Length: 109
View (spheres, rainbow, N blue to C red):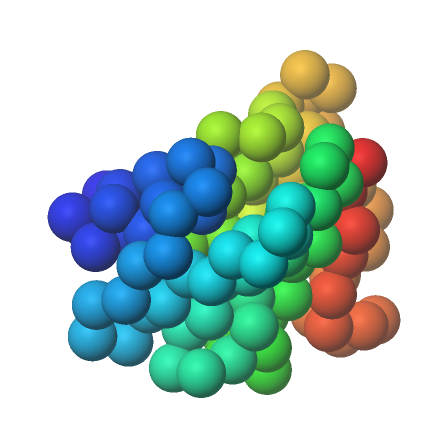
């Protein structure tokens, strides 16, 4: 994990604002939002989390999303043949849809 990802994810979960290079975390009341290049890629409100590829299928986007998910769930995003999928570790199988072809965001409860 990159140092910037580590610092951003800690800020995301600790209720702190953060900004470094291309990554920003903003908090407003009990809502945390993470941005990459100005695009919203993750939102946390209470026990709910929302993730988005924000139209950018880059390794950096995937890394930030995966570390947000790692702190919150047992899910992660992986790529196979240019498609992105969500893998459920506890089920030892992937959730059978390409989240970035069907729609550009996912809500995790």
